[in-house]
Length: 288
Image (cartoon, rainbow, N blue to C red; front, side, top):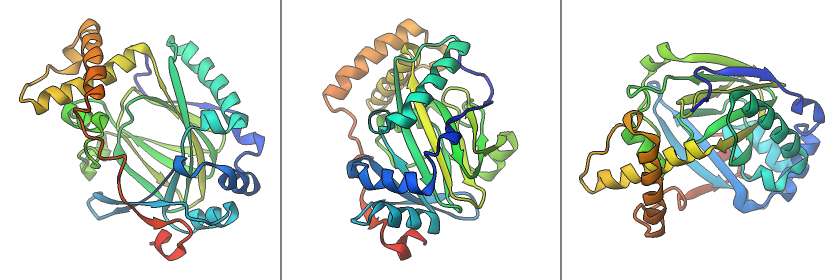
């Protein structure tokens, strides 16, 4: 698949549209559907290992929510931007089409999430089961992007994450940073990286706003489904072949199997019902 083999950065004009100002964000938070909020606090130890606490938006208005995000270590995702924020999604999708045209790929599905995160917020080592373009709109953040080999991205970890049967992220230790590409993003810059590349994020002391656009091609969709099917087969005691040695025709067959497996609910989604233990309007909790 002709995705980039190394991180690629470029400039964009989304940051100049005023959509990441305090006033625009407060108004967006006021009207955004509550069920499309993901509110997380990640706590880290000295070895880079983390624990996750999730929350809900509570009853506070948009201006209060924005103050709470800025005050603590909270990381807030507003999902389904493509349906709920046309002023941002329209130009972002145009930029995505231009980029994927240069790469020689055609998205069959694209979704967006707007990310609002506190100055001290961090996101642990993980991968996305789709291609990603991150448009940075406000603040400064540092992204560490790692190789996609078995040492950094074990196939079993990919399968569990795609199946959504675990709340754990990929195995990580600090020595992996020696193999990472480190990028510092400013407002007006965007980055994309190799398909499935593990990465982690640190904000650099400023409130940050970004738009993350995930997209699938037919090839990446089939590969994702193949990982799901392989995860189910592994639970049945079988040992699937390495994905790198699985031809696209076989991936297509596994993808078709994954559709039936999902219909039969053969992999319980443990992420969907993860307990939300605080409300964002609780300033003391959000700032922990």
